Image (cartoon, rainbow, N blue to C red; front, side):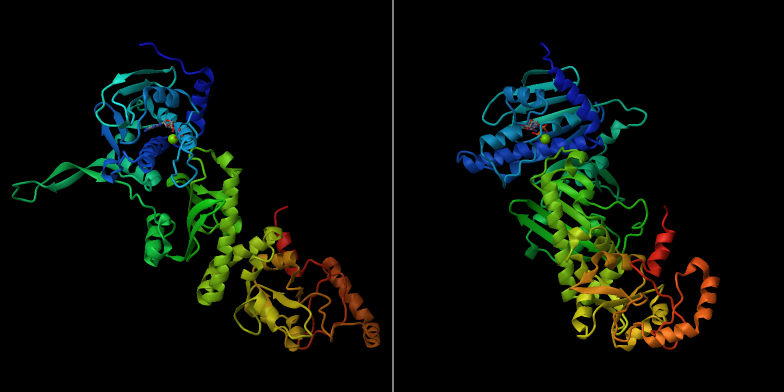
Length: 561
Ligand code: ADP
Ligand code: MG
């Protein structure tokens, strides 16, 4: 039997792919299972379009089995199979996707989401295999063929025996190396968990023979024996494909826990089904509490990313802006290719469109939470409000008018958190600015001499206790055409403000020497010492001129250069 050569460029591509596209070896199983699922989809499609073909659910499945003695792993499916030509074309040419061709031939545009279309997934088997044997019998034919290859120097094709339509792929595992134990892929539990992790939502049953302990027959003292029982290891129908009306809060909570998105309960879930120019399903969660490692280097933002039910990335960071990094959950789209690298994904147009859509959905959900369940919103804000302020600060251009409505600050008059909208709607007509004061705590701000004048006018003051507060509103400049004003700034815009009068000049003249002496002592700590009219019960206060306030100066000084 003459060996046929891979084309030279194919050989290089193969090496490159095996070593670089996939970060984890275990992913080969995901690839082979997705191919099997595609092959069954094609049968399903045939049945839809051809009356002589019936599609009986029970006859379509994927079976994963092992042979520990020979160190082989087998993935069998009852899908459409491949003819000799197809084996040659689809498996002998890298980057040849029979699935893509099938889609084109049958003008399948959507709905029947056949996963493959890239033509490299199959070769991922060579990450773990010394050799791969594929025996296949195509639908509508009676002969079977065997394709075999060790991955690097070509493949052979010869006639083979197979009773049923479908494909059986047998992988001879590589010898164990120091850093790699290929025997793991022979372990029931290991395989089961890989399948659960990547292929849980494949629509067809993935079966395995699982060892179970059952009471021994005719045994007196509760003796058990090990037997193999065929089990379906995947859960098949993903919750995100189900109808929202079928699902309860508890279903979402269970999913949150199963997925280990957090140890707490979700505060809110957001279930999105979009079916338009972009298509995706997503389930997102806002956690109740901040993850314990949220502010540590270890924390990684991101959502799980699926392509038609197959996991392609654990944490896709590109799906969430930094200020929503606390959001957990998953996104599934038919429009994403399975074996796409992280780098390419980053620039993927579909992914960008999805990310944008997700961002606006989260915003609108938070807005309605604020409106409909204040208590819950405040709980959320307590944990993650700071992120929103960072969002306003870092990304204001893009978020104008969105995030600012979600901000809340403590109010001097209401003695609780209020939104900017609430503040502005309460402003008396003669009030020009939105006033705020900064400090370490509400208590300390309350005692600031600078607040007195504004408070005396009956105006509300927002208390800023977090570093980011003032930076965020400086970025906004104004809210609903009302500018922000720090109560310790020079010009407060009050009628009673320190406008210079003759009397002032007189006072200043009389105290000239005192002020000079004070300035001398304070040196470059101050730029000026002046008479002030804003003081009532305090002898002195500090004010600033220009944009940078005292609190901001403090923070800027703490920052590393
Ligand atoms: P992709 O799935 O992106 O098309 P693969 O390298 O994973 O690329 O597979 C190449 C092609 O081989 C598939 O498109 C399909 O035509 C064929 N193929 C692979 N596995 C099977 C299978 N189990 N049954 C039928 N055809 C298969
Ligand atoms: Mg594939």
